[in-house]
Length: 109
Image 1 (spheres, one colour):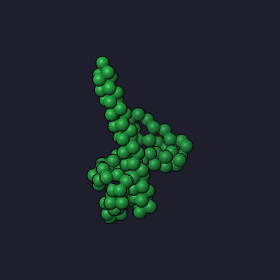
Image 2 (tube, one colour):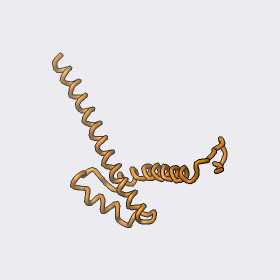
Image 3 (cartoon, one colour):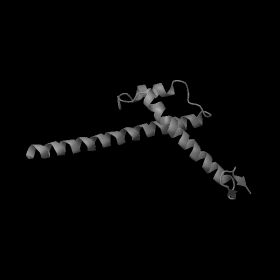
Image 4 (cartoon, helix red, strand yellow):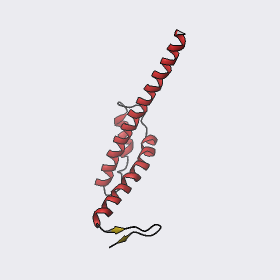
């Protein structure tokens, strides 16, 4: 009975540690994506050549698990969400009188 309880506790501890590790990795990749996005905005919409590979080489001491593919695949949807949110904010501030009909193009009055 004691061995069974120890196994259950060990499995639960492993699951909790895995979830914390996953959350920490996501937070790190979100921070990297935000850095890339800020650089892209300040560089007229494009990421400088070798910027991501330089980021990977500087971050190897902090996170040896980071590689260029992880950053690229994390940044693509993150950047699209951020761009979409930015465009919606710009449109919302352009006019207070925007009407959207279902299935139609938004009409600004």
